[in-house]
Image (cartoon, rainbow, N blue to C red; front, side, top):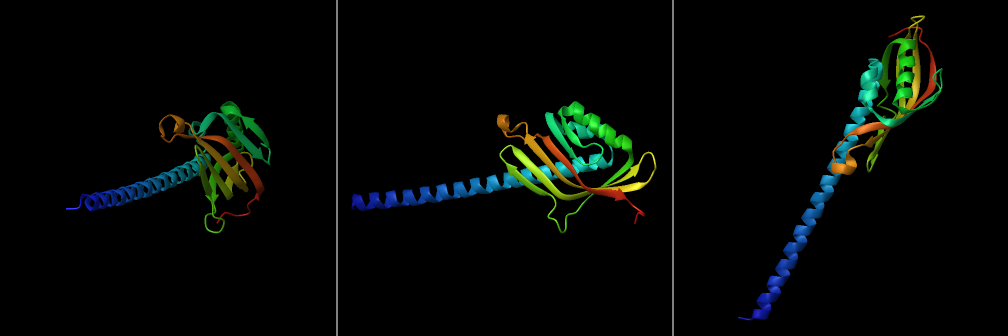
Length: 187
């Protein structure tokens, strides 16, 4: 027997099997990374919808649990126009909003505006809603009104750096009023 041929065949097979193993490993790693990113997209999309629903049910304590301590709320338009830093200022702002409205309903367009758009980059996730609408009932006049907004929520995964768990908190929020007015009837 020719040991050189046997050795060459053995080396060639070893290289082929090692290459196949490495290829499968990288394909699996890539698939796992894509799956993890999709889970983060789904999680943050769910958190945003939960945030808007908590606004609609006027549950200020649940809303405030979603914020990081150093969060910022940018309110553009209307009587609450301003920038609010920290949970105390944000809590006060939501309190004023809920005092003005005795009832709040939330709607988001999903069909024509690709709403919302979620991007995840490292520990940060950004949710942008091109159209959200709140229908509100005034506490003073009991009239129904609409508030159309574009909405941006920036979440930071507070637990990402330590052990890759998911603990997203809002670090920046923009409530941008793009239109508002009285409703003549509710259908």
